[in-house]
Length: 278
Picture 1 (cartoon, rainbow, N blue to C red):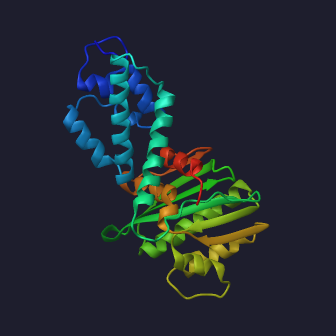
Picture 2 (cartoon, rainbow, N blue to C red):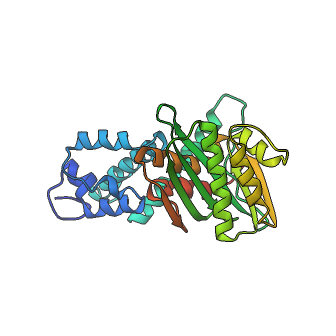
Picture 3 (cartoon, rainbow, N blue to C red):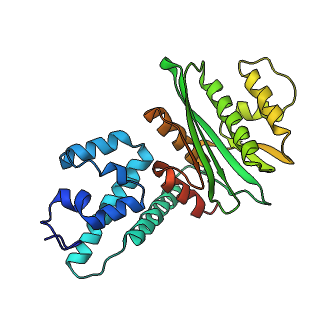
């Protein structure tokens, strides 16, 4: 009998996919969609999940499986147990700790930067793009967060016939400004990891590049704000916007959510929110 739910014979399929306690854990960590199809065998299911997730989400998935197994053993040996919310917090905390240990042990003297919350009542909007060169297909990801690090809005869109990755980044930056105008925020920081696009946004000198039309739109939109800053950030601090774009290009579907990130990005959003910069 399953030591976690007290009903049903315990099997590896039941433990990790069918047990009501386990399902609550997957739901808490926004992985519920990955356990709803019980037609696959366990090994086939693992392979399928890994094929659907990015490297960072595969790592999170493995920690969740490990945490479920550990909680099962604790219940079996009367060493206590955790609720779904407690296991969710444990997983997020453990991932953050792994990141910290990896950074400490890294021999390189290069400092790994982390996403930094905005200050002085600014709203920070991160943007990024994903691009499939052979198909001229692009997806953009945009996420807006306040000075507490809470997600105010997340958005991703898919585009066809985009001539270059450079153009995709410009489209993503323009979308960030369009969202700001729509939400009527008056003090904003637009942050992306495309240095060239950020430089073009900062200068008012007309340019004749392939993205000049997008840059013109960005300059026109920027006048709607009391303050609008464009800042470059390394890829390591732009993970949430990157994840949104990557998931959109993979699924060929966009999202538009107010007050939260989509399930596949919620864990990254929470990790960014609780991290403190060095």
